[in-house]
Image (tube, rainbow, N blue to C red):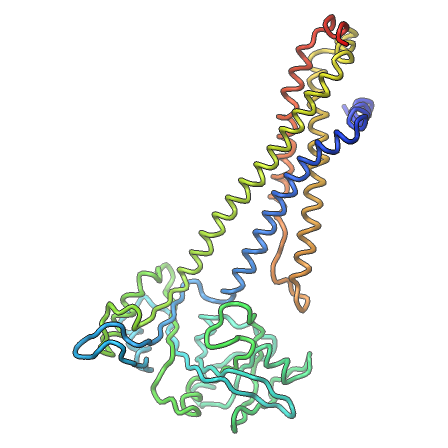
Length: 414
């Protein structure tokens, strides 16, 4: 049953020396605050780093040409060469483990115009399949489709920054035209993908995407391709396909198949694995530091409770003399320890959540939370359980000390 008088007595004991109780509880408060704040902060930091790869397929790779670094079949090293559209079909036929294979064209920077407004842009030529490599976040309209490719339609998808530079906020620009050089293109979509992450072919917010077949014609690119993006089939490890991809391209262009710098194959799988490994180490360090700080606070509680028991030797002796059992004394001391640790710990959790909420508000843009600086419910529940457990452990030694006090000895204590 709930004994109200007992808890009033505990409260009176803890508030009898407010400064000591506050300083003791602060150790637990700081330990819990550090643990919860570090966990929530680590989660938010991880999301911010993951935003750099937001929308990228985790099993993708990028292939592009660079000057050769090795002589081969009579060709000197340093030879410049270009990928070609036929390489797409070669990879499709000779590397069956690949799923999506899509070419990309880039252009030099320029300007887009709409009415009296202009925006600095970069132009990319892509096929509809590219959205499986780098997922767009379409605020308006659609992405490039097969009909755009087949008919070489003069359509485009613009980025967030280009949209804001050329149009008023909240206006749907789909169906309107922009001019690039001397050619007008009809807008069919607006991609709001973040420009803060890893971007291929220029800033995502300033990129204007054209059907690659149209860009080949307009920019007189012929059969050249600047980059080929690929993804592996389900269950395929992309790092195992890097060399087969390089060998197919090398054979078609008379390049040494071992020339890793002449034929660049950038595997995004490595980046995702690196990120995962990094945060496994960070999480381990967070728990190590947080639990260590919390343990230090619990030791402080135990030490203060030992002092309290020593000061209350006479009181405990009188209790024993009038019939208090050792179990009652044990329960009293442990209850004081648990309540002190729990109050301080829950205060630490609440303060940490408040700080994390402020960080989250600071990482909100256009009403969209960019990174969640919070801890999960089960993590907070685990932290609360650890606090209660440490309160019990911190009170055990003082409680056994109190139980060992004999009434006669306590009466003589000064």
